[in-house]
Length: 315
Length: 295
Image (cartoon, chains in turn red, brown):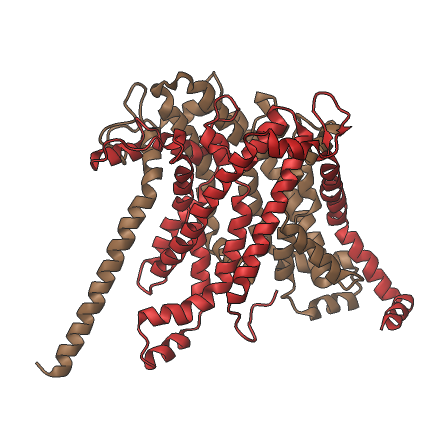
């Protein structure tokens, strides 16, 4: 087999060689970008993780495993920030999946005006960024904010302190992310609409009720989408930064301690305390943890994903 | 009444009841979902000295309609926001040009050309899509710092000219759907590959390139981390950074009297996102959904 391949390579027609050359010319931006903006920084980061490298006095000094040692023994925010990040993901991921599917089911009804409602729920997912974080900063103000004012009017005597409270800081971020559930609902909606009608009709003829139809048809056929959203949710959850920065303050002095997500901690270590080498080490630890999480997700859930035989969705 | 008439009436009643419940649920939830934005608008339209945090909460602008707040926020002498807005638009333009050109070129090769290593390299593209960007944060900074690009806009737009895996992916999917006969016919007419790209495939790919442009716009408009670590001159700040700066410097000492201005600024920063969404909603949702399904 290899001989035939080699033979083809040597005996390439001028046309084929032309096409090869042209192709690589077309690809050159990506290839250059890959090397310069990905591989080289990746290599530098791997090296930096084992050094003491401050912005103020380069060059880096090789310190071996010192960074790791510091991470696990002296950095009091390492485990803490990891815990905050995990707490956020455990709360927000299942919630967003369940609520997203429910909302999608709601929006999938064949009544008039559905397009309008879909837009309504999608809007909060479109408006992202610092502006929205600032909005929630105001909404969640413990004394003045609208959320607590409503809670007080409903009879809650001492509504939570939200961003400054150890128990309610992360939930406030979860609340923000649930507000944007319309974004994932639209994706589930597309998945729902890809389920062929005749399956439901056949089930009805066989006497299935709504409960059966959901568990035996809807859920299995939606499982690829669910799995995709789970994985992307995992990868995204580890990288929460902007909301944590704005809602938690930005510097180590007035950062709400309970908003110290892992990436925020990384940023503070690297860019505010200048410990670039340590920051690189933190980044690699994050990648490893995220990879483990994704692998775990695959091992547990991949076999539950129901792929239609002869599926039309080819990559 | 005949039995069948009774059954038909009860089924219709049931259906009408279901529709009623559905609509009530949707309207109720919809109102709840839109309330934060509505509060934002109300607060943004307050005048100076007016109470923003009213009890009970005012969700809708009823008394105050100070639209001039938007203008004031853009032109106030302390920190006018028109400059960060312009800076951001500048970056949006550069990034969009870079993204459309570079990704179209690369996707064309993967979609329409036959070459050695095509499948392997495409797998590399997909692999890089899964990479968490955090690992690159610090070394990219070191790289750009070494190049002397710290404090400039260069790190925030030059990389866009070198293609991005997600865009390569979706453009390639789109370009693959065209019949091969087009390319073959063009070749027979003497076109070289670039001409095939430029005169045939590129014009046909406009819809997916629009999606790329929209995504790029959103990404650049919302980019917070990039400007945060590369920019230090307040005059060069982009809108996202400027908003936070504005809030902290104008808002200092928790003086409620500036909340309305901060809300006006925040609202203005999200309006362009809403506008672009409304213009392209059909294509965007379709595009996101199809990528989502293919996983």
